[in-house]
Image (cartoon, rainbow over all chains, first blue to last red; front, side, top):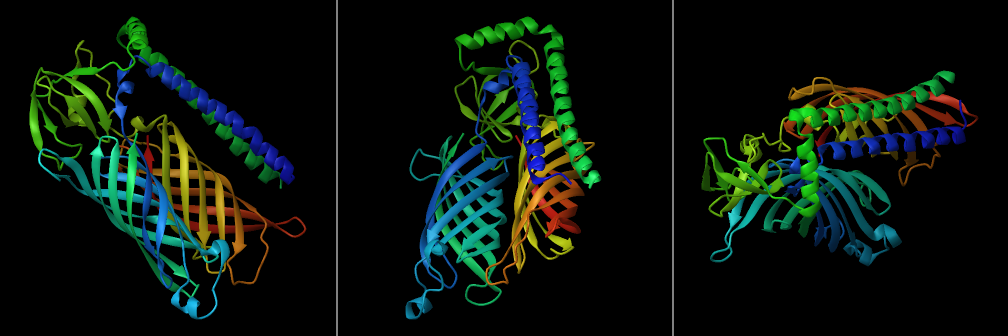
Length: 206
Length: 287
């Protein structure tokens, strides 16, 4: 068997070669389509980047202010893929206030990331005042992710519902209610923790 | 031992060959497109024009009996205007499955990509709007997705996993992707990352079987509160098969079974072979 060094070198040698080939092929596509397909110039809005803030209720602990970032890819009229990252600093639980801290330091920061698939259930419009109509949509999301809290990394299932309003073509405001469920051994063995997050986001489409 | 080295080399060579193949096939495609209808001069003109005008407005003539214009990019939004056959409209923006257009009477609304794809450019040449239709359409596209599942057999039986993938569909029937993910079990947790080839024949069907092969590295560590055991990084090869279901033109639901053959070196370079089975469900999108 080759040594670890040989193995690493083998991989390193292959990566730039394949990257070069892939990149050069992408350029070829751009050249070939340039001009023939004027459609390239049509402004598209498939990607969305956003910032989130809200409250997350950490099971057995407290409800805390959370901050997060997210990215969405709108694949079709109905479906989108979403990545979210969020974190919150968790203060002492009631039992901890009476006794000792279960854990301290960076373990007290609740961090999660997840990958979600979303479905726009109901598309509509809101009319907040006269002569103003904004596009809106109710959507559901579900997915998987990781929760890092109290020294535990746990497989997390996420499900939620959200409502979004398009302020204009490039700006979306949304409100989300999501449940992060995972098996935790922090307080009791194999307890299923349900951490409910209620948050609001601003997203920029491009 | 030599077999292992050779199989890895073969895999890397395969990746390189495929990447170069895709490059040539793209070059051919480029030639074909330039040949269509002897448009070469027009291309040159278009390029010249482009230098002067950064964003030329795309104007198309409606050839359907009529085109509905909705207030928003979705079937739930009301129709508020209709464009008649023969009228010229300006295309402003594109969102998934929908185009924003402005009609002659100055009204701006949204119409389906399907309806607009059946229109003509003012010059009379059919417009090639980047449009729907899976299969060939996903060729040369980037792909991203995620999946989740569980190990069914082997030492990691019962472990829950998820992985994220990003890649490139070099040919209509072949994709390359990088994958990374995590796995969780009561006593151990870990992460894995690797590179996969996806072979997906007959991509014009909405349900498409595919095969996957790949190579990667897995790291394991004990869960907090468990007896601390040191694990070395282990390398694995995967072979798998699955079914893709196209929920939309560029959105796929995937179900898959994978067989891992893991080689972990323990202690004095003694290779241990371990077989693992994993099922997973996931979503993939192309853009």
